[in-house]
Every structure is written in structure tokens, then in C-alpha cells.
Length: 578
Image (spheres, rainbow, N blue to C red):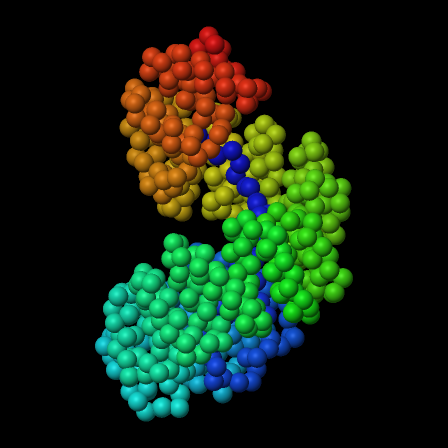
């Protein structure tokens, strides 16, 4: 089956992602993924006020998104730009980590040099630059020897050097071998908490979670107030002892009230367990201990979104506006989505309209247009998008894609196609525009063009599962060239094995091939993941063709009750005489 929507922004998913970034980059959580440099002093203690907190969080979020997608060069570039704006060594350190994680040694060297530039007194930065630039092509054995020599020669800096081991070994792909190196290097220094800490990291990366917990506990025994070790113990805890680990995390937070990272992690766990009242009380207590920390207030607002406490989230966001949270347009965009979720549509439209030209302007216009469309005001939605494109020309393509999607949803494929043709004049290789134009070309019976554009999408983006699915499903639906459809759909399934639309497409192919048992098996997998009228209509036809007309009638009756106005079900019923 083809996708139901080609552009489906989700506030909740966006909010969760932002929450993760706030926890990563907030006041006391600027470096949750790596140990803090306890020896370094100076500017790392606070972020300079050369960039707003909201701008800081937003750009850091862009870097994290790129890092999670494996786009190391984009992520590092974003963080290096942010470092130059803020002179914050934590950000340069994060850029260095990402580059090392993806083994981009030239980028790692650039990031490490900038880190040392903004924090020249940091021994950690110096050691990192030395290790990277001395010989980026060192073998693991050579690096081990180099670190061993540094540990022996600099007894006063052993803690700092030990903390660099996970980062330096991240260029090598074998976790078990890296753990062996870590254990050998730390063996003489097990009286230092840093030795156990890096052993714990190596164990966890090597999938020995119990070993990670054991070493984290050993580090905490030597330094009971070390927040990084407490968080390592939490993150390494296997699922079967998650509740016990959460209790340990709570106890650590109670004993160390300034450990905001640990306390936030505990609050997020409570929220994930649907213990919302406890999460709210813990969040209130954390805010009471850090009343001026606006980044923390923002992070907790997002947690409240996750727990469904939209009113509480809205209250915190409005407090941030009242406090002069610098990037008010971001807050207005998020507030608009919050009140839209609560069906306060006029207020949401006003909030979107208040977002000025800039970073969030196109997203606000998108939300405004979609909300108007939901209210049956397609013409107004199109006017909003056209006006926004004229006011911010750099966003024209993005806004045209939204307009085309709304026209497609309104069953106006010809008008949608016209808009997309304009988009493709501006960006001929835009895979989203090519894909969308192929989708609206099909109902216009422009089959050759549809195939041409889907094949171009596949050439430009070989991992675009929905392009393979769309082409394979179109051939299957028209009962043409099933031998070509099969490898296309198999490729789509290999890229997205849990996608209900793709499972349905494969089921429909098996139906066309007369393989009814295989078709039923696949369609049931699709139905387990998504309750959808088109999937149900296919199931009815498969059952009927397989000779089980009684079950087909029963499924059809149930589907009609759930989707009384669906034209696909109506057509199937007429065709089968139900």
C-alpha cells in the first residue's frame, strides 16, 4: 500500500528529541555522554553569554540529530560553529568525540585543536590533540604503548589521562579488543576512581552490562559523589534490574541534590514507567533547587509533554516567555503545538502567526497551514504558505512541499502535481519532491513519469524504502510486470521490515501471484502493526480468493463498522457482493 501521508510532523516525537538534547546539553548536563574533566578550570565552568540559551540548545540539537544519523561532518561543523560563537570548550569536546566516534580523524584533529584554543589550560584537550595529531594511523598496540608511557611519566595527571582512554580507543572498531587494552592500561591504577570508570565504559560498550555496573560501583566506592559514575551505573544496568538501578539513582540524587543530570534521568525513568505523579513531584523538587535554571525548566516542560501533562508543560513554557527566554519564537512554535493538541485552534493559529521570519518561521507556517486544512480551509492554508514563501524565499521549496501534500490529501492530484513541477524547477534532484510528484502522477495515469521519478529517487537515495515500495506496489496494483515488482518490494522489506505499508504491499503481491497462504501470513503481520481500511480491504479479498468467504464477510462487516465511509471497502463489498 502507498503511504497515507508524505509529510507528517509530530510534535510529541519532536518534543522527545528536544528533551534528550536538553538533558545532554543543559545547565548541569552539558556532557552526559563523556566524563567531566575534573582537573580543568576556567571557562568550562559556565557558558559565555554571547548566544542565547535557546539558540545554544537549538544549534546543539541540530548537531545531535546529525550525529545520530551518522552525518559526522555535519555534526562536527555545527558544533565547531557553536564553539566559535560561545567559546565553550564543552562543545568543542563534543565535536571531537563525534569525529572520533565515526573515525573522522581529520575532523577530530580540527575539533581538538579548537578545543585547546578555547581552553588552553585543559590537560585533557592537550592530551587529546597530542594523541590525535601525533599519529592518527597508530595501531591499537602503538596507541596502548603511548598511553602507558604518558601514565608512567605524569603521575599527577593520571586521572585526566585515564578519562581519555574511551575517546582515544573509539577510532578502533573492536569493543572486546578495546576493553582488553583498557583493562591492561588501568590495572596498575585501580586505586583511582577514573580507572574503574573507564573500565565500566569499556565493559558496557562490549555488551557486558553487569561488568559495567560492577566497575561503576567501584568508582563510586572511591568517589561517592561522582555523578558521571552514578549515571554510568544507571545506563549500564540491564533491563531485569532497572527498578533497582532507578532506586540507586534516586538515592544518589537525594544525597547529592546538585546532581541535576542524575535527578533528570530518574524523572525521565518515572515518566517512562507512567508514574506521572511521582515524576511531577520529583521535577517540582528539582526546579525548586534550581529556580533560575531556565534550561532545566525547559527540559522538564518537555518531560511533561511526554507524560501527557500538557497544561503543566504549557505553564512552564509561558513562565519561560515571562522570564525573557531569549528565543521567544521557538517557544511560541512549541506552545502553538501544545494548545493545538488541546484543540484550542484559534489560540494555536495566533501563536504560529506570531513567529517572526527566521529559523522557525517556515515550521510555524507549516503548522498554521495544516491546522487550517484540518478545519476545511484549504484556500486559507494555501494563502498562508504562499505569503510565507514570499516573505522568506529560502523556505520556498519546503513550503511548496507542504502545499503539494495538502492538495494531495484534498484529492486534488492535478493541482498538487503543478506545485511539485515548480519545486522541481528549483531543485531537480530533491528526492522528497520527486517522490511526491510520483505519488500524484499515478492517479493522473502518468505511469511512465511515475516510474521514471521513483527510479530517480532510488538512484539518488538507495536506502529510500518507500520509493521501492511505491514502485513495486504500483506495478502490483495494476497487475503488471510482477517479476519486476517482487525484487522492488523485497528490497523495501529488507530496508524497513516492520513497516505495515510495505508488509501490505508484499501481501498484495503474493495475492496477485496466487500464493494465498503467504499473502495471509504477510497481511496479518501488517494488521498487527496498523489498523487501516486499505489493509483490511486487501485481507477481505485475500480471504475470499482463498475460499474462506465466511471469514471474509465477517472481516468486511467489522471493517465497515470501523471505517463506514471508506471508498476502498465500499468498492470491495460491491465487487464481492457483500
